[in-house]
Image (tube, rainbow, N blue to C red):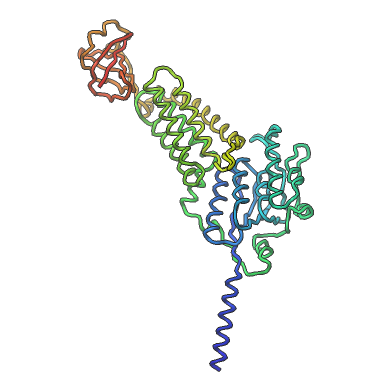
Length: 440
């Protein structure tokens, strides 16, 4: 009897071990939003977490009307490069960029009443984009279909501007773009696993509060607001004396813009460095060099380029063969330029509205120049102050106001550039064209 019980225990243990080995793990990523940098980061993070969980399959639960082509291209490439099979479950809609992402998956299952296709490139207002954009999308659709053994001509038809193609589940099965009809992710897992025991792990359960915060900050609307904070803050700080709220606003905007993109592996170190270099060049042009020339223009280009490149997956911009693909940068560059224009016009409007109110005193330094308080215009007797000491009356960056020993308030500039705070003592080294030139 004991021998029989021992044999039974061994048999059950062996059966349990065998069942454990045949367990199929699915990692579910729910993509039910517009395709943008936020969704790009969501899928990329999901693939990393699935790799850590040693999942056998990725189950991409799709319901999207599309979005940005550059973000869709990055998601497509990440799926094609992934070492484990990726299964798409079209949970109602896989339109436009969603169709491209679906075709990149190894297999596609669709829900009753769902559709896939309509991948024509359109603007944010719904207008069909010029043929060069359509040609780029057609090429991606064909290449993606060929990579997974699907008919490239049918994939290309989904971008046709004259008679765009969308497929129902039955139609998609007939042309080889769908492996079956399922009503939920469990039916998909059951068919893919071939009847073996399976478990579905959800990415939502692995998301930390930091992951969710980064996803929120990568929202395109918030990213545009952060860009306007950066550019608007810099513009107002340049246009007003002193250091105050505008500079703080620009710094906060830069942190909110670059930090989530850097943590989410969208922005690289060189892009942040390019942004800092751009700011330095602008500062040199304003505070050191006269006029506005090479340094200022180079700084503006560097800042705009850094903001735009941080929205693009570098793997899609720089190819392994050394070539450069400019198409993914077009849309982010347009967003940056529009945000910059909105920031400048908005800053001008805000400054004009606030200047006459007391609130402006909390934003920037304001000093009214009254003649009875010692302020003068252009004078010709300034040579008497050469060699004397003067007191900085307003912060100098490098220009500003100084007070002489006889209480006159005069225009002055630091001879070698730089910055001097109110109250510092400077030495006058020369006087030219109604202005004193000083040094510390």
